[in-house]
Image (tube, rainbow over all chains, first blue to last red; front, side, top):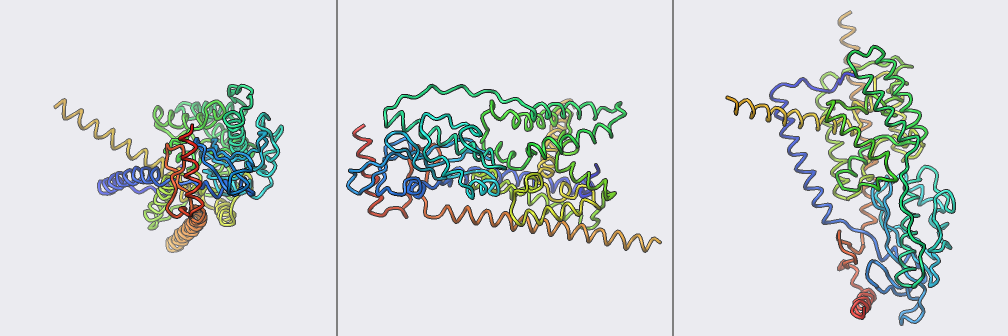
Length: 403
Length: 80
C-alpha cells in the first residue's frame, strides 16, 4: 500500500522529524515519571460501598480493613481488602468484603485500566452483585460458577480474580481458615494463538520476492484476520497494548500468550525483516476497510496540499493518546480505536458516528482509518524514523573511524 | 479536460480533509469525555503511592472520623 500522506524526505523535513522525535520521546518519558508519582486510587469510598453498613474501618495493614458496624468497634461486620488482578489494559483493583465466615458480602471497584466503553458494560450489569454470597473457597471460574459479561470477558475475569484473591487472603490471615493450595496457571494455547502464528508464517512466505501468489495469499491472510482475530475473538493490535508495554503492565504469560505473540511477533519481524507484518497483512479492521474498498472500487487518493497538515495531526493524536495513558497510568483510557465498536458493537455514541463515517469513506478511499486516524501508523513511522537515524549515525561513525 | 481533472482532484482533497478533521474532532471529543469522567472520579480520594502497601491520606480526608480510623490502625499495627 502506498502512503499518500508521507512527505518526500527532503533534508529539512528529515531534520524537523528528528527534532520532533526527540521532543516526543522526552515528553513520553516525562509523562511516565509524572504519572508514576501522581497515581491515585479510590479507597475509602470503595470500602464504604463494599460494606455499606459499616460505621468505621480499621486499617490492619496489607490493604486490609476491619469493618465495624458501630463507632465503638463492638460489632464486627467483617473484613475488607483491596485486591488487584490484571485486566485488559492493566491492573483492576477492587474492594472485596467478607463476613466473619469468609463469605463475600460486598464488592466495589477501586480502580481499573480497561477501555471505558468495555468496562462500563460490567458496571451497567449486575455482574458485581452476582459475586455476593460466594465463599473464599469457591473456585471463581468464569463461565462455570460466575457468568462473564458478554463483550467484557477480560474485565469480568480481572474482577473475579481480584475477589478470589482478596477473599482468600482475608480468610487465611484474619479468619484463620484453611485454604486449598493454589493451582498453577495453565498455559492457554488455543485457536487465536495458532491462527496468529499461521498468519505470521503466511506473511513471511507472501513477502518473499520470488513468491508469485502474493496478492492471493495477502487477501487470504486479511480475510482470516478479519474473521478470526476480528469477529470471533476481537483481539486486534491497539494503542492500549503499546501503552501497556510502556507502562510495564505485562500480563501473566501463561494466560495471555496471544498478547505476547502479537507484540513479540511484530517487534521480531520489524527488527529482522524491517517490515510491519501486521497492518497490511492481517489487521482485522484494515481488512474490513479493504473489503469495503473492493466493493466500492476505492483508490489511494492524495490529500494534496493538506498532506503535511493531516500527517502531523495524525501523529499529534497518537502522541496525545500515549501521553494521556502514561499520565493517568491507564492504557485503555485514550484508546480511541473503533475496533470494538465494529466487531462487538461496544463503544460510545461518538465512536459509532466515527465508525459510520470511516466505513462509508472506505468505499471510496483505500483504508482511510489507517491513513489518517489509526494511532498504530504514527508509532510505526516513529520507530522507522528513529531506526533510520540510528543506522545512519552508526554508519557515519563507522566510515569516519575507517578514514 | 485537464481543468476538469484538476477540479476533481481539488474536490477529493477537500473531501479527505473534511473527513480527517471530522474524525479527529470526534476522537478528541470522545477522549475528552473519558478523561473528564476519570478526573471527576479521582476527586476527593485517598492517595496510594506506587509501592506502598497502605494508603497515605490526602489532607482533604482529614475529618475527625478518618483520623480516628488511622489512629486505630496504627495502634493495631503496633500491637502486631
